[in-house]
Image (tube, rainbow, N blue to C red):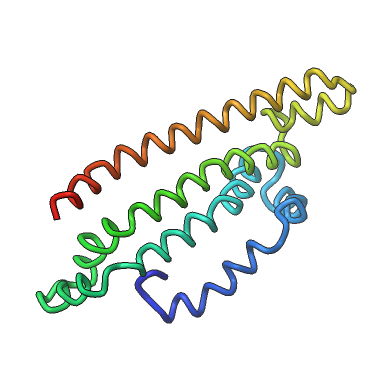
Length: 174
């Protein structure tokens, strides 16, 4: 979609529509289609974290310096060369911002999926603790989810740093 305006205009309304529907409302449908367990959890998780990553990626790929884009065009670069050597490196900071948001939402999606259709996992444990009226267990699970989310976010920041530090070193040379 980032390289084809036609595809973007065709598919983007459907992508946005898929995001405005509450995932919790779709969860029972996913359970009917994919059954209880991991498959429905993965689908819910993917739906929740896909949009911010896609939106940031598409926006970042389009925010390339017009002079650099023109230079690539004048040098006869193909669309693939322009994508790989100009658009992706230039858009990497925005893409990684979407990645940071997506990894946190992936945890949310996994817990929601386990809430609805899982018999295992932290989401299922929250539901079980609710059924047993075990408030301390529920808070313990929420604390585990919070710490896990913070660790995942820090891991995403580390990945971003590894990918972007050469990017910024090259920019300093320019």
